[in-house]
Image (cartoon, rainbow, N blue to C red):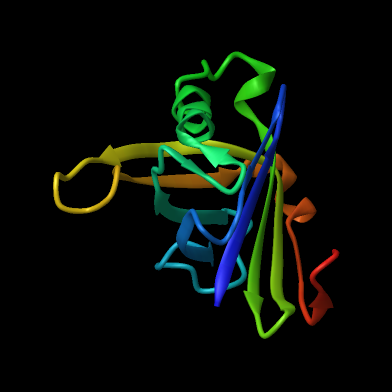
Length: 143
């Protein structure tokens, strides 16, 4: 199993299977809802490696994520188009698209015993664009 991540905004950031470690997606409503709620959240957690250079991805690519996390809420660039592909057996098991994602949290950890470091980020889809979140699967790797 592997993952790819594409973030499109003022520039495009691509990470291959060598960088992304885990992806967790949750579509949630408040725990006290007694009926289908309009107060929902679509959230994605992503962790990955910070590598000095690797197959086209570099430390500067993770630096771009760090910089995105710092973009002001008033800037249109705070919202970006994010696609995660979950890969298994030469197939796209799941392709998840958050077209108006913003960064909730971003963090980096460094250790003298594990490579160059690791990053984690929490993304959320803009509330008035929840209907635009898409997921599909069983696709060829070219999608």
